[in-house]
Image (tube, chains in turn orange, yellow):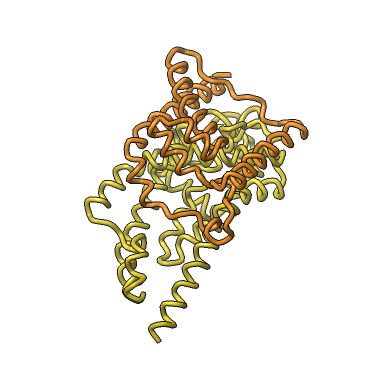
Length: 131
Length: 238
């Protein structure tokens, strides 16, 4: 029981630290992005890969332009916002004595299928949008 | 007399503690072994006998131990990679046609200031990378149904990813280091996931390969483009 509470506290603090680090690194996002190469999948096949636009969406988010980020890659934008905002909430609530609890991870097949469909739908959007 | 079984003294040291929870790998038992010895013993065990190492690894309890281990090992990996980059990058680049050298700046190490800065910032990058990679891998494990029998939760995945940084030692090998590290990481990942999450090997491989396949496809296409460019450049020179 004690170990479980320690784990929850650590998770809250770790997630909070990651979110804070990402906010700090966001100030240097433009410089970091220049060191990255373009997507070879897209340059070779002419189609975006499922993760295309993540860097550009992150750059837009670092400039607080959520709408543009959502247009580039909706799923990645939502996940990045959950990562950062969720991390800040988790960190603060852990300090307040309420560490985050893990959800149930063993999803039913229909739930897993739903998750997969969300990923495929996002990829279809990237292809249609020419991201 | 000598056949008498002693009822005093420390309990027998098996791989499992109470409630079938493993006692911890040497790094997780550093309070009794000492920090230095615990680290070295754990490193040796993960290199020589990863099945036994992950078998001894606790499923839950704290995030600090695996995180600290990964930051130390990952930092050494970054240092080694930077050294090879500085030593070999320029000599490899000198074999390329002049018009291609400007397009391959990532083959050479940066300035010494940049090197020091990247080593200072490395723990932050490692922390962020560990967490994001663990989250992605965990999502893939959810997708393939690999957490059905797991009681370790996200912490189990974080532990696997953290201790898998041992594969960074592959970067000790110049030039081929990154390939060795990649393959070794996959092998350690499969062993870790099957041990900590009780997933099947197929589920572990699938979960690891989903994100890697995306990255690898990008790398394969990049290498093909680079190869085609190189051949064209050498052909025009010849």
